[in-house]
Image 1 (cartoon, rainbow, N blue to C red):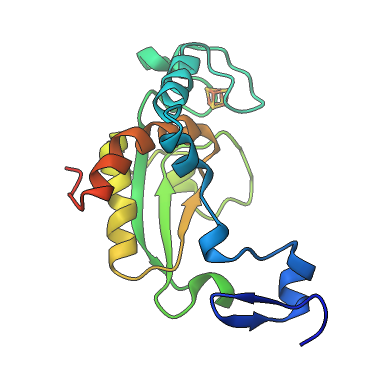
Image 2 (cartoon, rainbow, N blue to C red):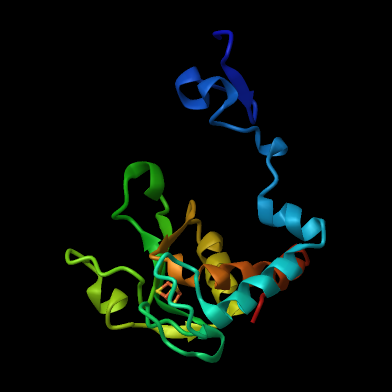
Amino acid sequence: MRPFDCIVNGDATPFELNGGGRFTLSRQDFVPAYVKAFEEGVLHERAQQAIEALRSCRVCPRDCEIDRFNNKIGVCKSGRLARVASAFPHFGEEDCLRGWNGSGTIFFGWCNLRCVFCQNFETSQFGEGAEVTACELAQIMLDLQRIGCHNINFVTPEHVVPRFQTMGPRALPKISRGQRLR
Ligand code: SF4
């Protein structure tokens, strides 16, 4: 082993992967930011702030400043709730993302972009899908995890980021007790 190689989960991680400790953390040393915020008791407050910010939406650089809290519509055509068009193990991603069980992909309806080459225009421009609550969105993610997906892969999520922030306070206590969310 070279001087800056390290041990992660009992395995030696090559220098090219861990960058001398800059790229790879030991699993026991890693606490996701949302879990830390939950344990510090600030996650609920942050979720409330995210939802309140929808009253004058500046979630993306379009800065529409319209009241999405009351379902007024800006450039992305998205209201208070996120729309989900589909969720499934995606095997069309790169090897490192799809692994052998697929990437847990969630396609969101509407989009704040207007890319002329969009390959998902029915979803991004026509708003395919159905609105979901924060609990329903969290449950979709848990279901993808349960069937073995290696990660969660949001397509394209910028306009619905505040919905993610509201999932944590509702989902984490139930996840820790092993309950379903619906
Ligand atoms: S997220 Fe939508 S409503 Fe908000 S600023 Fe961007 S385009 Fe406008």
